[in-house]
Length: 249
Image (cartoon, rainbow, N blue to C red; front, side):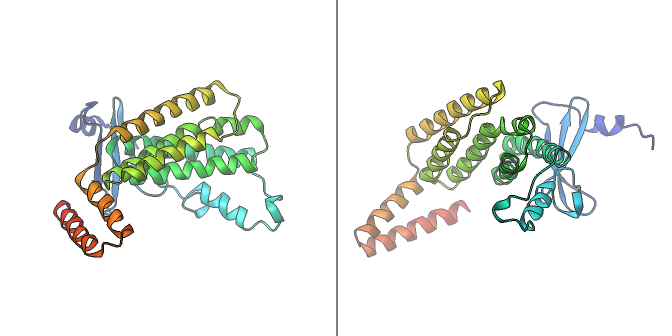
């Protein structure tokens, strides 16, 4: 079908400060659209970014996990991912990467956490069940970056809930996880590992230097009151916390 897209593109001209929008599709579902210099991309917000259902499943990852679950051999010894299925996983991971990068920039940290977890699960499968070393490197060299993005999104969610301790825990956990990774012998891995650790440590330092909010101070005082069995004081603090949360809701 031949169709000139000029009118559609002119209706939403490219602007680097106005690239993203979430609209309702004809069936009512929300979709993410991205204006690029030469066109418009559209992503599903949930499930696979392209809306496809490989093997009749939500994703290739789900299919691989189902195959693993149905494997009869103890300790997973009979399950392997061949090169064709590896490529399916790799291409799916790229789609999720494109989407979570946009979602993070939009401040949709919940979906960013979900998408980065998807790709971390792909990394785990590739590490355990792909035999070709070159195939493994293709994906595992990016694992430090994926861990970093997952932790940053998680930390932002915690900060949004005024939980600095939770945010620090997410960042420190990611630093520890990256430090424990087996080395992948590629320049990309070494670059992503160094950059991710620097980024996470900087973010962790910034949170530690940040002054606690009113809600955080109240929660800390509540913990102290409960520990000291000062129950009247604890009840008063709970009421103040609840009132503050209600005003912000």
